[in-house]
Length: 208
Image (tube, rainbow, N blue to C red; front, side, top):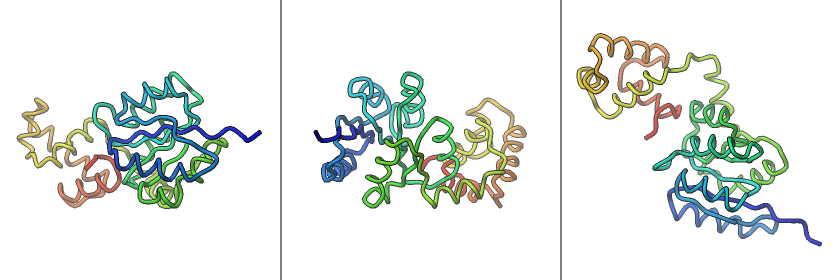
């Protein structure tokens, strides 16, 4: 009797990527795709229906992002094994995913080379973090993290808002916003606002 196949759920808002993942999985004799989802809410519903062995979860999605969906799934199913997929190798995103209970973190650019082995490792109970992501995590391990408010301010800066506009949006004084901006620059080691946005994007603190 042949061993049971590894049952995989794929979650990504891009249909072409889901089809690409399915094509790779179909080539593997030891696994099968049992369900697909296009956002975090669908992911939770499909997980409940399919009870997959391993879930491939994109981070950036509409309605409910991958990490929020991961938290929700693991609150119901603590043994759920989830591989987080991303285009970023940023440490902040990886840290969020790992704290939420992800078993692996895989760059989409490496799906063809590493996805099947990563699925097998996670199914076997092993954790897997790519070398590039591990280096990012190590480099920023002792950095002081931005607060939720500082991340919000950095997002508003990335959208092109001035301090006055940010103050209006957050119903705060311009001096308070200037204080947040100073803290952001210091914590990120940034020279100016534009540099801070660049670092925030590279490290996955804010999304593109």
